[in-house]
Image (tube, rainbow, N blue to C red):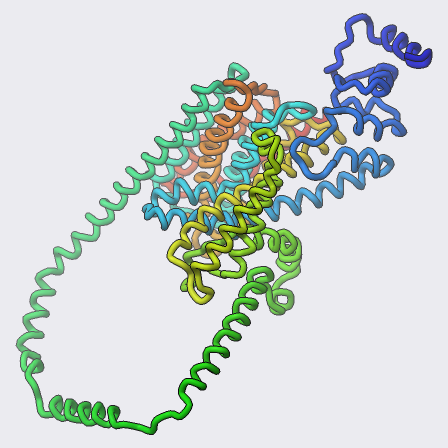
Length: 602
């Protein structure tokens, strides 16, 4: 240690006292400078605000807390090393980047994950009810669920990931229950099915109350996590029982008019038998028609001229068919990569064109790596032999890259990439030798499971980037994890629900849009917390610490108020959702937003 560093250490000691807490967020300038010069890793990245602008780049470069976990872009260095004088511009860039990530996460779920889940459900021959509350529910809430899982398995550093994860659950539920359902109620008078409505709303109320009870002691243990998964299983059973009850009720209602009309049907049959009983006998007209048909058949079998050089014609035909087949494969391959035409950019509105341009780059990578199987598009179900070869080569390679750290821990002495590439090439050759380009093979259903796994990998990658951007925004703007989860992450993930449910209501199905506004958040809570908490307690040694902040408590109170208000309002309105209920729900969310924002910036 030279004299200059010794002086800085002495000043730090005089300024901070004998016991220095390096985990606080308020650091004297001399203390920070000394730690940076000695490459200390004890200081949190939030302390960058206590460093001179000229030293902030060195600080975020040397501090371990400022390094991105499991991401592919270094956002903190981008802000403090390249935009240190233009941090506001960096925030705007992050807003656009977050929008890009949210849009593409929705595209990955909509166009790749959901078709694979539907194909798996059909392969397993699941009923619509079971598939709806399991595979299809996972597809609809994939963005929220994977964001929660990614947050819960990360180690808390600059951002309390636990608060962000729980905040996204409560914030997303409050947004959909209050804003989405409120907008639909303001525009439509909705008749509610009592049994289904109270089934979903009651389970949602129980799930939120149970989650609050789990968080009351500040941690989630293994038993509580398993209990939440059990609650989800009980809800699936409840859905099956209620749907079966509704089905029997409809069948009984349909039998009554059938019994009453039996006598009329028999009378009509008797009249028909007496009036047209002779029509079954052979008539001269029928016999003459049969003779004409025999003459035509005999003429069709008359010998014709033999074709010369038949083998040469067959050979030319086979060559032409092969050329047409290769040309068709290339056309199908290009159409899969770029499923847009000129009319896409000339006949649609500007915002749809912007959406297409935003999705196009990542869509190409997803198409090249995910073997889509879509049984709603017969007869080939999106089968493309040339594209499948690319999927089998690129998909495993991307998976290996995404989980590089995991593979290095398992096989540190073997280069896993070469093994994965070799196996992928063998599988691709095997598929090429046992399939045809004009029709899918009998084992096409296997690719549905591969598509599911690859879709999960891509959604995990995108969700991880979303979390890293939120962490950087929290550092730059000094925002809490709870606020980022309640407002930013919840809002981004809920935009798709807003658009989908409102569009469904505008297409003449407001009851469906209104029901989805409660069923979606319910399944997100059950599956997100269930899977996420299990992964978290397994990662963190049997318990997962969560701190209930004032903002989370306020959000919970407003969410419970919205749920109870909806249940009471629908009951008092004779199981009809009126405009007044929509206005109350929207006002509830606005009030919650104002209170949480005021606490954050006070």
